[in-house]
Length: 178
Image 1 (cartoon, rainbow, N blue to C red):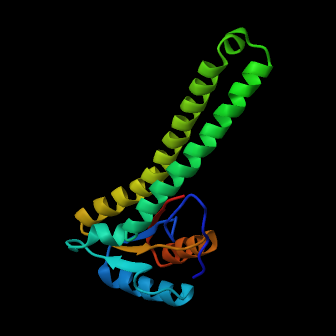
Image 2 (cartoon, rainbow, N blue to C red):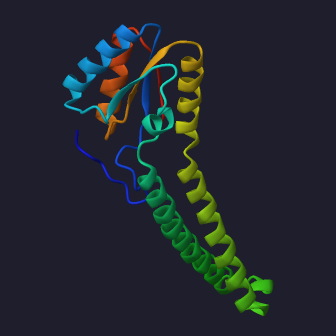
Image 3 (cartoon, helix red, strand yellow):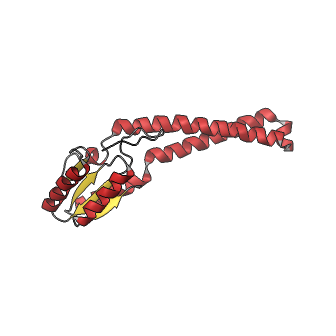
């Protein structure tokens, strides 16, 4: 699979696709077919059964990538927010807003500071990846109820779409992140 890198993310795979199967045999067959179809290896497409000891690592294998995402996104979006805050302050001062004209340093400090914080809040949301958390919760729920999951970490949107379609064709209940 090819990798699509976004500058904010440190992970190789931004999407999580899971197929939930009632039977382990069907899950193993679907995983093998999907590996062949996508030219993927066992790290990218994994079968997870109830009681598997390494479920967390299977669902989120790129722990180092998550840290890189956190650092990159906070640095870039914090700096972007700071820059936008400076532009906002300049616009308020040049625009003649009385409070900004009377205290340009306070206006600049407040606008740049608040916008930098806003950028870092957005970065935090990107790092937490609530869309992936929903998929992980559904997989864990299925495992607790005796089902088996095929978990795929596709590296681009085309592979994610293909994985979803293949798992659905194999009879799985498919859940995926954005």
